[in-house]
Amino acid sequence: MARALVVAFAGAAVNQVAAQAPAPARVWVTPAAGDADRGRALYAAQCTSCHAVDAHKTGPAHRGVMGRRVGSAPGYRYSDELAASRLRWTAQTLNAWLATLR
Ligand code: HEC
Image 1: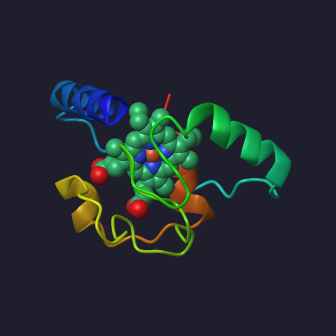
Image 2: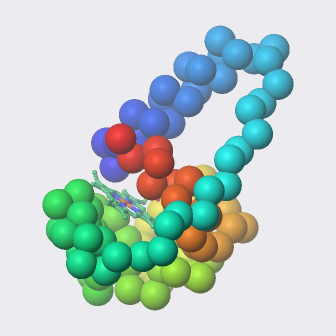
């Protein structure tokens, strides 16, 4: 949650400064082919402080997230932005979202 808020505030500040500039085009990158062992290790190291596969923690449960509508896991209270999104989680949208978690 804290990271999401930091990103939101940083984005708001940048938007004010760059109010006159045209919005940069979003870059949709298709990630390289998967490596499940590396993914499992990265997930354990970087995601499980807030997420679990089958339970909501600070963040929503992840089982079935691929292909699911953004912000639609039953029983999890999302931010207004995610709840209102009409995107689905694909390799491209996940990659763009995860690139903001730094
Ligand atoms: C500091 C806590 C935190 C960490 C660490 C974190 N997340 Fe999240 N994540 C959240 C929160 C909170 C939300 C819900 C955001 C919202 O409602 O706007 C979320 C939402 C998501 C979603 C959207 C799920 C949906 O149902 O639409 C995905 C996908 C996701 N995170 C993936 C990850 C991955 C992968 C990692 C590790 C690389 C990660 N997150 C690390 C807190 C975290």
